Amino acid sequence: MKTAEELRQLLDRIDHRGYPAYKDTKGRYDFGRYILNIEHVQGDPFASPSKVSLCVEGRKAGFLREYYEQKHRRISLQDYLLRRFAVQTGKFSFQAKGSGKSGLLGVSRPGQEILERSACHIDEKNGDVLIRMEIGFPANGRTVNAGELKKILFEFLPQCVEKTLFAKAYRPEALLENAYLADDRLFIRQEMGRLGLVVFIADGSVLPRESGVSDKPLKGAVPFTSPDSLAVTLELPHKGSIRGMGLKRGITMIAGGGYHGKSTLLKAIERGVYDHIAGDGREFVMTDGSAMKIRAEDGRSVRGVDISLFIRELPNGKDTKEFHTEDASGSTSQAANVIEALEAGSQVLLIDEDTSATNFMVRDELMQQVVHPDKEPIIPFLYRVRELYEHCGISTVLVAGSSGTYFHKADCILQMDNYRALNITEKAKQAALAYPLLADAERDFIEPVYERRLRGEQSFWTDERLKIKSLGMEGILLHKESVDLRYVEQLVDEEQIHALCGLLKQSGRKLLDGKRSLKEVVDFLWEQLMQNGVEAAAEGNFPPGNLAMPRKQEIFACLNRCRRLHT
Ligand code: ADP
Ligand code: MG
Image (cartoon, rainbow, N blue to C red; front, side):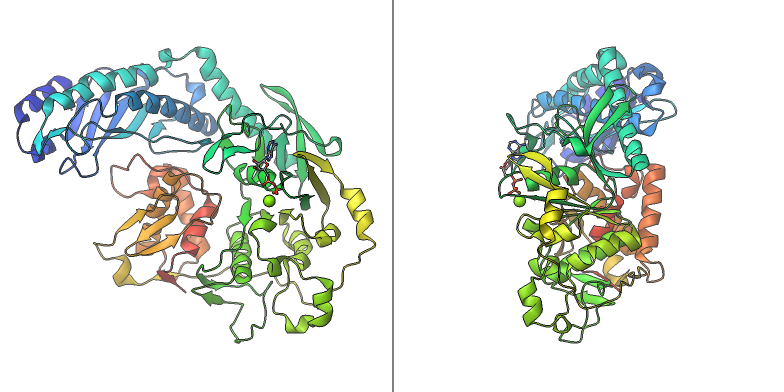
C-alpha cells in the first residue's frame, strides 16, 4: 500500500498530461484515518466515472460491536451511515470542475426502504466500514486536471468520511435508537409468524404517499387505526406496547367504495415485505416477507408454466400444463403470475381488482347460466382461492370493491370507509346468504408441478460482447431486447435491478443449463447472496457500489420474464 503523500506526488507528476495518465493512480493509499482504494479509472472524462472505495478500520471507526454483529442491526447501521455519507458527498459533487463528468461524486441514494446495498458494508467480525462510490476524475478538455482531483481526494472526501463513518460523529442515542428500531421490527416479524399473522399495521401508521412519483408520506393523511375486533397488541423489546391490525392467515377481502383508500392499504401491504426508515409512516407496517403482488400483465412471455389450475382446454388446443406464449392475455398472464409466485415460495398473494383481469377473478351467475362452464377454459380465482389455502396454505389479501362474490370465500372482510378500516365480516357474510354462489364445474385441484428447466442459447449468453444493463425501473436491456420488469411491483429500487442484471447474467451463462430446475438455480443464487452479501450479484474482485438486495421472488420474476431463456 502506498501513502497519501505518494498519491499527491503522482498527481503532481501527471498534471496536464493526456487523460489516460490517470490510470497510474489505480491502487490503495493510506490516508491515516482510512484507506482509499482506486479500483477502476475511467478512460476519458465522458466515460462512466472512476470506481473508488473507502475503508475505515473497525477499531478506528469505533462503532460498538453490538451494532453490527447481528445481521438485522448491521443492515440498519449500514443504511444509516450510507444516507448520511450521501448527503455529505452531495454537497461536494461537481464542486471540483472540468469537462464531462469531472467532479462528480456519486454514491447510492437510498429511498424509503432499508435494503442491503453494496455501497456500504460493515464487516460483522471486525467492524471495518467500507463505502463504494464513483468519482468523475477532473479534466481540462482531455487532459488531467490534478489540482481538482486533489481537492476531491484531499479536502472533500476526508470531510465526508470524518462526518459520517466514525461513531464519534453521531450522538450515541441516535445509533442506539437505530439499533432498537431494527430489533423491534425483527421482533414484530417473528411474532407475526408465531401468531399466524400475514400482515400487521400499527395504529398511527401513515399509508398514503405524497404522489404517484414520490414515496414520501402524504402530509395531513388520516392515520391508520385498527378495528377493535382485529386489534393485536405486541410487547416490543424496546418501544414497548404497540397496538395494530393483525390479518390472520387465510383469505382477507378489502371492500369499500371507490376512493376510500383500498388500493392505498394494499400498496402499503405490498411494501411491507421491506423495512422502512424512521419517519416513513410505514415503519410498523409489516407483511409476510414472501408475499407477492399478483396482477394481470398482458403481453408478457411465459415459459412452460403449469397454469392448468386456472386455465384448461384452450380452443387452440394449447397445453396449459406447460403453457408457453410470447404474448400472454390478461387472464393467462395473471394465472402464470400466481403459479410462478407459488414456485417462488410465496405464502401470501396480494391482489387488487384495479390491476386484475376480470375474467380471471370472477364470472357472474348470468354468464354461468348462459355459457356453460364446460365451454369456459378459465376457472376463476374465486373457485381456487379457498383450495389454495386449504391444500397449499397460501393466504390471499384481495381488494374487491365491485364484486361481492368473494364474501362467500373470505375469512375476514374489511371495509375501507373514508380511509378507516372497519371489520364487516359478519354483516357481509349475512348479506351474502341471500345471494348463494352457483357451483362452478367440478374441476379437481391438482397442485401444479414446479420442475421447469430453463436454458439459454449458448452462443447468445457466452458472447463476450453481450451487454446487460438496467433500464431504470423499467427492466433490463439484454443485448437489444428488454426484460420488462415494470409490473413486478415489489421491485422498489433501481439498484435491485442492477443486482438482477448480474444474477441474470450468471444464470444465462452458466447456471441455467437445462439440467437444473429454475428453483434449484434461484436457490443457489440466493445461497450465494446470503453467504457473501449482495456483492455476489456481480462477478469480479471489485463489485460496483450500485447493487441492492432483491428478494428471491424478484429473482424468479426476472428469470421468468426473460425471452432469451427457453424450456
Ligand atoms: P380506492 O382504491 O379505494 O379507490 P385509493 O386507495 O386509490 O382508493 O385512494 C384514493 C385517494 O385517497 C388517493 O389519492 C390516496 O392518496 C388518498 N388516501 C388514501 N388513504 C388516505 C389516508 N389515510 N389519508 C388521506 N388520503 C388518503
Ligand atoms: Mg383502487
